[in-house]
Length: 97
Image (tube, rainbow, N blue to C red; front, side, top):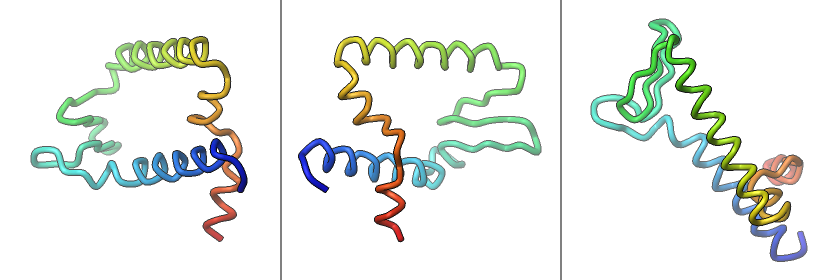
């Protein structure tokens, strides 16, 4: 691996993977911070319970996140977005093997 951006990209990838795998183990109150209970059809995010009929709220949050991503792309250019959202995870898998 050469270059500062490639090393930064790799470290950000590791950080995001650890965060993705570690969030379900974080306690929040008397339960997990993020709990997706498929059997009872309820989704708990940091104490907030979402039911299946709350789909419009989730769709709105995803649209806000998409517009925020587009706005960040517009401000920073493709370099920062490519750094934070890499499409090629092969280097991460090769380091694990």
